[in-house]
Structures are given as C-alpha cells and as structure tokens.
Image (cartoon, rainbow, N blue to C red; front, side, top):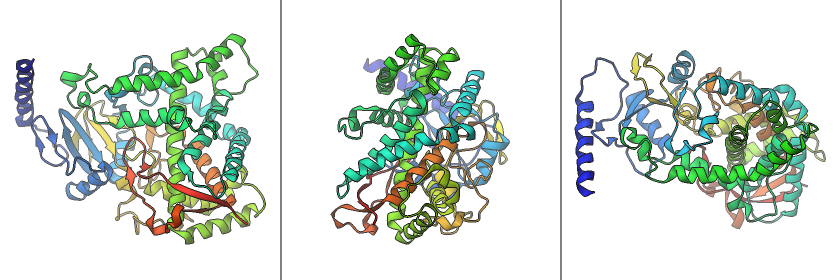
Length: 486
C-alpha cells in the first residue's frame, strides 16, 4: 500500500508539473502564485475566505484566478466583474458546480439548487414561482405568515426577562411558515428543547456546513471523483434521509386519501405527477436555504440595530407612527415602512446571505474583462467584497440604512453593486418571499419588545464576527433578553 501511495503521488507530481509548465496562448486572469499539486496557498488556513479574497482583489484586481488542486477557481470581486459573469456571460457561466458532498443518490438527480439549467430545472422553478413566490400567492398567504409571527410573539412573551437564543426561535418561526405553505403542518415546536440538535433545523445547518467543507475529491477529481474519502457525502446522505423521513408519512397519507381540499405545495406536486424522490428534493431545497439565510439575516439586523441605538430609535418611531403603539404589524403594512426596508437592505449589503452565491461552472471557455475563463472553471462572485467596495459605497463598513432611503438601488438583480440574491437566470427564486418574511418578523420583534444583552453587556461588546459557510452566520449566536415595550 505504501508503494502504491508513493507511485500515485509521483504520478500526481508529474501530471501537475506538466500542466503547470505547459505554455498557454490564452490570457488568464491574474492571481497569486500556484504550486504544483497543491495549487494556490491562501494567506491563512483558518482564514475567512470572503475577507481574504476581498483583500487579494485589491492587489490582483476584480477578476482573479486561483488553482486549488487541479481545479481553476475564478473570483469576481466588484460590480463590473459581477455584471460580466451574471449578465453578459450569463448563459455560458450558468452551469452549477456540484460539490462531491452533495451528490447524494436519489437527491442530486432532482436537485434544483445543484442542477444545470435543464428543462426539469425550469419546470420546478416555474411551479415554485407560481405557487409560492408570485405576488398573487404572497398576498394570498399573508395571513399564514401573520399567524406564525403571532405564535412567535406569544412564545417570547412567556420568555420575557429571560435569555433567548435568538436565531433558534426565529429559525423555528420561519420553518413553521414554510411548513404551513408546503404541507399544511408545523415543523418546529418552540417548547421542545431537543429540536435544537435533532430537528429539521439542525439537519439543514449540517447540510450547509457539509456543502462548504473543503473536500479532496473536489480538488483532485481525476483521482477521487467517485470516492467519498472524507465521508462527507455519507454524512449528507444521512441528513437527506432523516429529512425525507420527517415528512414521508405526510406524503403517504395525502397520496392514500387523495385529499384535494389542501391548498399547499404538496397537493400541487401530487396533482402534477411528481414522484416521492422528486418531492423530497423540492421540499429539502424549499425548507433548507430559505429558512437558514432568512433567520441569519434577521439575527444580523437586530445585532446591527443594538449596536446602533440611534437607528433603532428611528425604526421605533416609524413603526409607532405607521402601525400604532397598541396594534400588531400586518403584512399589508410593509410597503409603508421605508426605514424598516432600508434597515433590511443595509443588513443584506453588510451580511449577504450567501457570500459567494452558489458556485457557477463555465460550460464553455469565454472572455470576461479581456481575460479567458477556461471551460470547467468554478466561478465565484464575492458579494462580501462587492457590498464593501469603497469605490462604490461611502463608509462601506458602517451600518447606514439612510443610504437606501430615496435610492433606486434594489435587490432585483439590476444594480450589480448590490445583488444579495444574485442576478440572471440563477437568481434566488425565493427572494420575494424571503424579503417579506424578514421584514415582517423584524418589524414585529422591534415593535413588540425592547431587547437587551445578557449580563449587562454594553452594545459595543457585542461580537459581530462571522462564520463562513454556504450561509453567512454570526460566529457567536445572538443571545438577548426580550422585554415588552411600554
């Protein structure tokens, strides 16, 4: 075995040197030096990639090329490069990089997140857009979102004066909103302490961690593509299996009873002839990314407001004026709350839900900013860098919601200096629902409660460090104490 390992290492070295020394007539994007076999060594093994790549872009430019193992990775780091990737070369760069860890049999074949732009992908997106994300359906389902927010407020009233792990309860509220829309049942029990580690919330977080974990099979696919050397795919398969089992009885019961009285996504999929594995994949990807990223956005927003009390006062004043001190927030109030909307938009600028978007793949070689992106390259868009670009934003590291008041800049994918949900054909399909959910929950939380930090902690002591992954989360979860506003 030792001789075989040495032989493979020797072959890798020779192949890598040949590729490394091979002359190329193409003008590739600039980037740091790449070693044979290893590829590019980034500044720190424990770095925050979004931050370190932002710093490197200031040296090498807005379009950079890295080699990790045998794989090319191109990173776009400003709005011009993002427009080239997501608009001008949208078709050619619309392929999807499928991490080895997510290639779970029975799931990956029907994935929408990890699929290329196939006819099946288009069909599923159309169904979700029609049944969940259209303006008509958002208005139809407004009462569902309001009901679930009311349940959250009741739970927090019972916790008045106690420490609350903020993102857990927000995550639970969003899961219940989605559960009501997807199969007409709650998912999360606020009083069940075991749900933190064993429920759907924990599995969603685990899947996102596994998808973002560096994998030798992705770096050296020639040799390890079919293997699961680190066991990441096995772990992902276990999470997918447990999530599918959590709603299997619901699907079976609905199929058996043929109950057409339910007005939810499950009934639409059954009536459209979808198989159980197809429904499992759709459910997993509808519950998963949307709940995690929306909960994190609300957590970041409240943390920023606590650190900037003058902004919190302005938001209180708007909510009291528009809603009325003794009234509850309704979905229909949201268009009349511009400062609330500005707070959410500013949070998304500083803390993009998916800091690199989901990685793209170049289906063919193409030209971007006078450089060649080789076919098969992984393409990342660094939203963290774009949102903090000092050539685009004044005081880019400061939380200033006022910058979005009376501004035409929105997150619809038309202003490439601000694309928290991406742009082009790969733009997040759940943006409209996600932004309504975030605004409604944040408005209710701020309007109903005053929030303080535990142990007499001062606002300036609040840890705002982030933890890198597919989603952009706080390193230290926000723990707060709710008190009913007088």
